[in-house]
Length: 190
Ligand SMILES: [Mg+2]
Image (cartoon, rainbow, N blue to C red; front, side, top):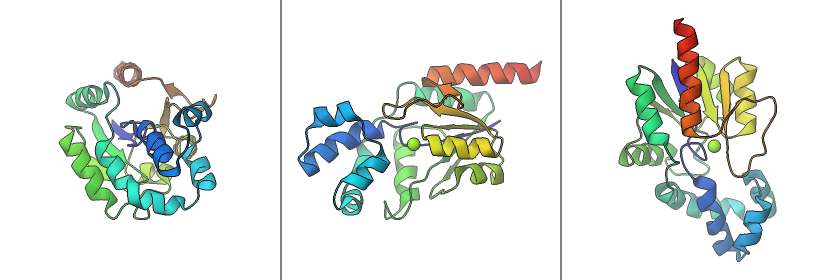
């Protein structure tokens, strides 16, 4: 199967690095930020000169973020079982001077396996269709709904700041996601 996986907050702990950066740059109380857990959209709406902040800081953030627990192990295992891993991210040229390169270099340097990397994706559902994706994993509610609209088997990766959506199946961890895929493959083979 072709498994499409998002980068920020699915493979990487982006939000966990974003909030301290916001706190430092805007002189805000980090604890309060953590209590409120603003979404990226809320941050973009409430923080002044957010675009400048993003352009100045996001490429640094993209290089230092850590990988989520078991992500590498599970992606390697899935690939060794014959699945194709497509990394599909919305990272774009408004945020990064070269979103493909920065993401590619990161994936390679962290030994994260993939068969294809696609950046600058606005409509993830549509892109999944054109890329022949079978399974979609993303933390973002809008992206998940977009994939579901095109009947792609979708799982929302549990994140620190997205409230769960009842209608979207969830993967609570990378191990959980592995078990979901194993069960699916098992069903398909029998
Ligand atoms: Mg994401």
